[in-house]
Image (tube, rainbow, N blue to C red; front, side):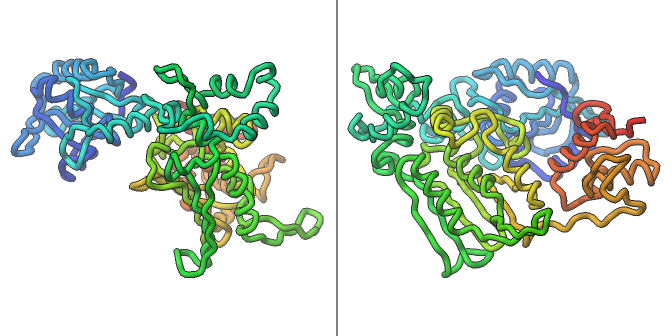
Length: 475
């Protein structure tokens, strides 16, 4: 088990008052392993959750745990009884009046699909349900335990590949010198040998080099549209972009160039220049990410690129892959489709290690635009870029402002707020939360980067670790 997740009395009371749900449930204090393990498995296969031990099953009254240490041992044995074993934070004792409850936290975004006693379970509202075969396969693919892209494409043969495009790909890279196109595709995972000894394209091979991929993999296309207003309306331009993924990405680039608005900007020497309403590279990157990391086993829908007057949305089918969550999407690295990612990287469409999220954030900040938003919808993942018409206004200059510099070092307005908080107001330390309260319209990741930048500039010193960290002025 990993480090303890801190939860207090008020947190527990809040969970109880809200009632049982998909991510909250409870058991009596003497619940056996056979009751604990299925509940942990169902939450692990869903969106995570919290299990409370020490509540009467029918009355939902707090009765406490007679022997907390023995209960912790049963929780540990329950995690070891799952397949594969669950790795979750250490169970925590919480005092509620005269009673002691045990709080077990199941994190969201665990890397595997878990079973207990041969059953794969999932949460539906406040109940544990056995996964049907189709749903089990989808969650296995989403978490990387099964790879859809490596499977032989149903009904496809070598004639379904565009060998002219394959040869162009092979000839462009020296690493393939001396290998035939067929050998290269076998090494890259775009071809596979069946049990009968026949060489056929994989789903990845069809996506990347297929003559007509959408005839074999329905929904592997992109719908691009530009709307006149801030919502869908009758005035729009639409393009349905099909073909192999490299060709789709080239057409998307052209669509963005044609339909993103251009704005006049004045350069440092008062020279006029044009810039798109979003950095072109950032707009391109989020589409590339959607194409590279979407769940292609879901064939009822494709990637959607919608440009509105105030924002640009890119939605891709399927949930976030593996251990990636909305909370860790900036730092976490996991690819549902490593073959597709590798080949697109070979072709120069995608940065193999970074996947572009960091770059999108940096490009938006450089142009003074809001932090991108990431959200999971019922059917997929949506990334939204907002243009200058909805950019939050910069914070008002604090009293005794530093005028963009502190001791000869350039600082931005948010960093001025942090320094004003420490220097002018006499606070001995500042935390991410403090600066977030001073700049409420600024994304928490931007706040973190601003404070880290002050450390790099030698102005602040970071103290403590993770949630307990804070910053002080360097003397």
